[in-house]
Image 1 (cartoon, rainbow, N blue to C red):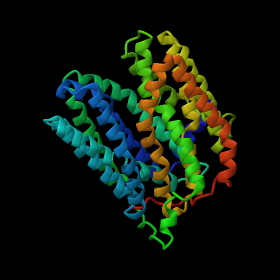
Image 2: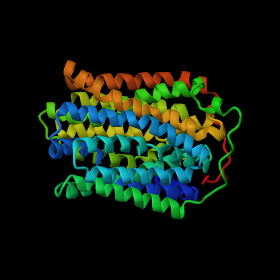
Image 3: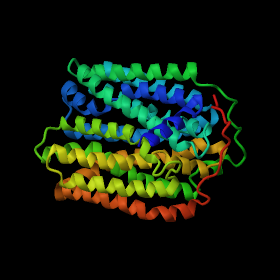
Image 4: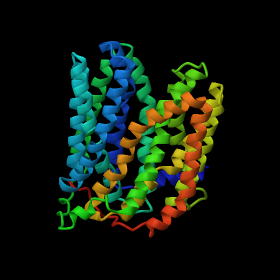
Length: 407
């Protein structure tokens, strides 16, 4: 194990400076990104919104993130990765401050929709930066470092959320806005600027990705995965309630998950010098994820939920970054941001579908039905990986290691 840890740290040290800067900036941003889970109670406590109204507002937010993600990919390819990241973070800060100072429910709804429209702008360019500056062999390490940094920040974020939430829930949105601005400042000051993005060609319309069957197949699989994953936020609190456990246990379980992601990085190498990659890693990850999800369906104690959380988090570790590497391999270099954006729409679609599906399954058969259904879907994704690999062959196309971040 010591050799694997050393090898993992060595892999992180050889990553380009742009990766380290981006990970540091995104980790700072993640430190304050705890406001959204508190949006529902804020609407109820501060504006006397009904549960039905809150559901509609949150659905509107999820729907607004879809054009946000697509716009982020388009801007990343046209204006540059760095500029889009800074613009997206600044927009998020403005929308969060609008939320914090809103005086009526109508104003809150406008601010929530505005937040959704800028919320995903910086995701496609962030992913594109990691891909642009790394070789296919180093991309799992780059995404692993990003996951470890954000997971570490998430553990501290819970403590900060507890402190600020005890004062006033609106302070959570102020803190989130400030971390967005700090992240934007770090990116602006420290991330290197490369040459301008490649000009749009006459075939740019065909490079949007919507006509590429490989990308659409990955989008479909990614939407299923995202819908499963979001049940952790939708179905797990309700599961704890049905098991007559305090919902506050959710914070502990999420902390355990974050710690597992950090500690599990060395496990990415199944044997010294070798790493599960691409579709094989994703198939293994989905199987492990399924085992952990199934365990949550039958857990009755905090210890049992914690054990299941560790298992599905290990599956998450195995899945890290591989899908984005595959998208990079099938995308034209001049359309990489747009391809990543199309794939990222899976999270917007899941944000709309997950609450409806999760609550329906819980109502029909309780936690056992919800989590075994999720486990079955994860197994189905594992079984589909060979077919996806054949469709997307060759699975990886080497990109220049010397690529720089476009401004």
